[in-house]
Length: 414
Image 1 (cartoon, rainbow, N blue to C red):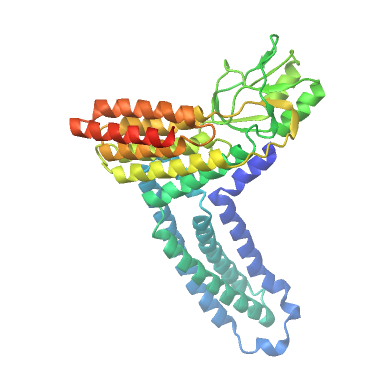
Image 2 (image 1 turned 60 degrees about the horizontal axis):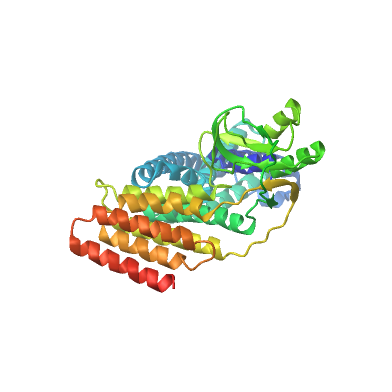
């Protein structure tokens, strides 16, 4: 994905973008009635007066303002609940929720449609035929509001809940992991050893690497007649003393500056090209659920189940490695990188709970036979068992967990 396309995708996810789009459409619709007036037969206009349309628009304007204010307040409360009950990193997904954005945009657009219609009626720009069009459009808008309200009521019953938020994070991580499974090198060539005279390209500022425009790197590499070796993957923290990429020789300051433009740095991580982030956020939800203040091992067990599904899908998805950028070498993300950020915090925070330890060992045993996961799951199983033996207070619980781990090892690793 090019940088401009990525920026456009981010823009369309903003709440204000969709609201502004609906607002412009609403105002244009209200003013359209004056333009289309000559095309309405005269006999239809006699039965609809200006007062009928004006009364309906007045009711619509007052009610939609209240509904919009209520909906925004509810969304803020849902964001706060998600922050307190899951993790602050989940709030972005709730803000980008299309259903919530559509509802807010519909209510705001309907309010401004009504206000525009009232202003236009008061200035007299509508003739008798224009009032007919405005009346028909108003009826259609009311119908759309009713449908949106019904959907919004059903959506509010889930917004901000722990289960709903976890499911959204799982889906975001699934999309990124599937892209990684199909294109482990992001459309570039596999990584090769760097030449002895490799010239590093350092970033000019600090931040998390959110996006890499491989198409731009390919064009610059072809122009310079060199290969670009990517050193840092999306999700890594960039620093002026850590290289972003390397070339065989020094390409010059101008080319270096253009190479830096292919890397987008931000102060926070993103779910798009960073599959590790989704797993880390899921792990944060489990860690908060396992804290003494919450004490909800059921949520942690659910997160382990979700993470197991994601890692199994990633391991079993067939790769489709098409080389679109032959001049760019990209390292693949290892299983250790994925599993370390997910299992280790849960094993640490759930070390004193037998039920969490059992689910953790069973999840690892299910992942162990899958391609590329054997060594990493063995290591995490041993680490988790060691933590649990130090955290469990009863000898009987330690014996039960050792038996589960041994049975899982016998079943999964013949």
